[in-house]
Image (cartoon, rainbow, N blue to C red; front, side, top):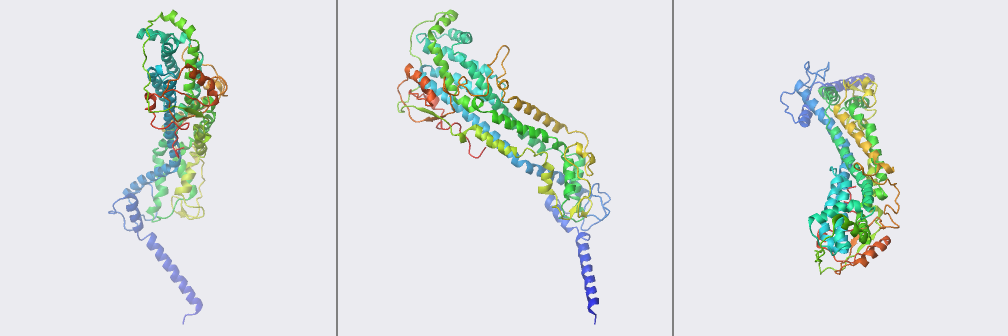
Amino acid sequence: MMDRPTWRVGCCCLLLLALVVFTRGEDVQSCEEVRKLFQWRLVGAVKGLPDSPRPGPDLQVCVSKKPTCCTRKMEERYQVAARQDMQQALQTSSSTLKFLISRNAAAFQETLETLIRQAENYTSILFCNTYRNMALEAAASVQEFFTDVGLYLFGADVNPEEFVNRFFDSLFPLVYSHLINPAVTDGSLEYSECIRMARRDINPFGDIPQRVMGQMGRSLLPSRTFLQALNLGIEVINTTDHLPFSRECGRALLRMQYCSHCQGLTLRKPCMGYCLNVVRGCLAHVAELSPHWHAYIRSLEELSDAMHGTYDIEHVLLNFHLLVNDAVMRAHLDGQKLSEQVNKICGHPIRTPTESPRCSLDGSREKLRMKISTRNGEETLASRRKEFINSLRLHRTFYGGLANQLCVNDIAAADGLPCWNGEDIVKSYTQPVVGSGIKAQSGNPEVKVKGIDPVINQIIDKLKHVIQLLQGRSPKPDKWDLPMGSGGGVDQVSGDCDDEDGCGGSGSGEVKRTLKITDWMPDEMNLSDVKQIHQTDGGNTLDTTGAGCTAATEAMTFPLMGAVMLLPGLW
């Protein structure tokens, strides 16, 4: 019989032999797993693929002294797959950021559109209930004004100074013929045009047109810039998501992700250091975006913080109708002097009183009351912007840490596990690991980075430009006013909200407001009612006890509730 020590040695030898046979059978003698994965991953035909390892002298990248399960055609397909894998990983990594910016850009634009509609309705209701005789004639000017506001906000090449002046130019003939000198019925276009042209010389509305220009400049331009910046952010992400990889990068990605398959090592992931070198080399140009992206987000945050008070577009647009009312009242109170000035410039008109067209009455409706109250802070654009900026701030280092994110989350093996180093399975990667950016790649052992990427440089230039625009809308007083034409100008105002800006106290008593329509009243408001509105609106209640007009109310398919209709969950 065999003694116990000899038996133990024999068992150990048998186990060792079995392990060797098993290992050789899995890693060397069969390419079955490689064939299956190739067919599944690349949807390629298995015909012509090696059944067992064989020499691969024609391979260009996955070169090995050992027998291989790859052919030249397989290597070419693997290279395409490696590029696609990296592009997919980039898109997955940026998907949260891209969705955050794109949904907020869309929601911000839709909110602005709703805000413009509300402000237009406020102004239309003012004319229909307070100045009903001129309401129908004013409707076209009101609509044109707010159309121009929208065009400017969304990037069209329109001049705010021009459309503000155009509105008040068109308003003066109506005020003159219906309030200042209602007996005048000279309906000739020449006479109306003369009054319109005389508005800037006569200055019937005092400083109100200039105040409107100043407020529009301080609110529209920052909002326009903010929206443009969001759209550029989406463009930057789309560009980096679909950036073509260099030939050197493609070969390095192939070696990292699929050359291990050629040796039958289908389950081993790349070493962390190896992955970082390859991905940092491939994304060296993308990493150059990092400081500019950080500055872009910081500039967005600074602009958002500065958009308050008279810099708040909600405040300006939703109080526009009050400034219009102030302008009409001022002209009416100075009516005698203005009438004399018009007579000197345009001559004496025909004086034959006739009935002017009015807003359509709806007898079935009762009294209209527009109750204006302070808005809930949670519903403001400012708070929504702040919420968005707080989320965006988390992505300031996105491009600087992109390679790390890809390797840690998707590509590389966890620390301490055997891993692929581009040639074999090892315990750890021994080559030096380089940093991010183009300069750091001079010592990269895996990828050679040459030259500059013109696409990335173009994106960097765009980011620099929009950063300058964002910083140019800083809270400094001289940065916020509209660029005037030659000889024109707007009074420089501070960011603080004072009486002259119409934020409360004297004047029109502008406040942040909501509009609630509760009931209607069919009888027409007279001048004493108008004066009462002008004097008591500082108490945050505007009671327009006049009849409604079909032109304004038909456009309101929803109650004018809240400062702005915000879409839940989009910010």
